[in-house]
Length: 567
Image 1 (tube, one colour):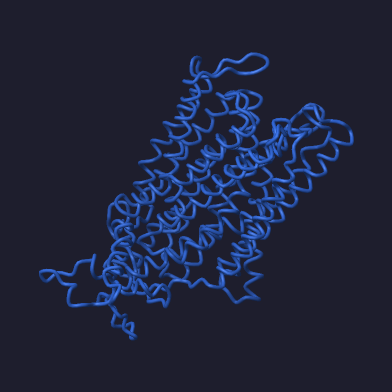
Image 2 (tube, helix red, strand yellow):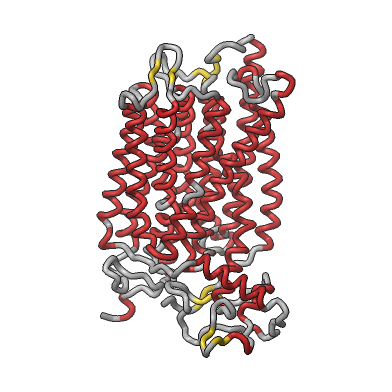
């Protein structure tokens, strides 16, 4: 068969043979990945969207404790991907990492369902409150953190695994890959739509056992979807430990700290072959930044030990540029933390704010406050195809860029929209509190103000997601070294983790500061007597400062340049 029939990006099929372009990859493989992601996200959001209310109602936790436990757990869900990414890039590959961690995920989902439905594991409740034992609380949190570990093997791999189905060296496939990230995020939000509407309603009206059981079944369906496409997948070979290669460059640079880097950069060490020494990776061109690390690629007489070159003394330009790529990504990565803090308010403060408002939708039906996140989902479902089919072609006419906007421009637009979302949420809270004061509704559980006034803030965050989160997915995949893509996807996910942890820290600091002297503080259990609007203003100010810093970072950033073919 002709060489043109095979991919040039080093991918293989499930049997380890070179991937055939006509028989593997592209959209025919991605439909299974998108189906898997839709069901897995339905399971995740079906369990997490309303978690703050479960912890409050069934585990008898106050607003601050429940909010902090949700953000701490959610943050852990975005730290564990570093474990899965390391295993995928180093040893297992993305396919087998996903296949392994889904088992832990399903066990966790099953245990959570049992802890909410089986007598002895679920808390006993009377008309006023529930009375969880220490063991029942522990069972719930063991299940939650098993899910956090399970999702850690899936999150960093699945988007990169989908992008692997398109050969970057093929111009047609490269354009399809850019669209893949939009449709990938769309599939996430279709799953989230069902979760935030149907599943939240089941949890609040039918029971938590069914409410957690349905997501467990959805996770099982996700596994089936994933394995059905096995014969069509293109697999990227693991390239060995990326951490080891990074440390080797650092050690070699320090050892040669007194060595002069030649003015002619072609004298720096690189293999003569077209392929890179790193399995599954193309060569990277030299970049004129972080010059200290160039010392690792300077050849000296001491580099050979018994006729062999030690990678702890001499590294290739590609290996040095791998480290530089990671260092370049860090400032962009850090700018996503505050955005993720804003995003995390949908599952905490937005829900607590909505709990105080009139949730009626007609005379007989009540919409749970957590279900309003479906408007965030609907916003993403609306904006993702609009961005791909309308905004990109229109912007391309003015910018000349094949994607309409650069990835950094796209993320910057999302950061700006997130500022507007916090201002909108703050204005609503000012209006709500004025309404409470005017009518003396301080001790009223539900004030006669429709919960649907929250829709704009959810819709704006959904719009911001399409620009920032999807742009971030594509950016970290494209700018990552070929053999570090899972690791860099995990790195991008840790912004969500740190955003949740930052939210926890802010809530804790604000609560301790504002409750001094016996005051109720900004976020009391009775939100009608608090000042949640001040918390939203704080987030808006942090987001604005973050946006200013981001503009400087994006001007400074240098995009990577890859050459040649991978092994």
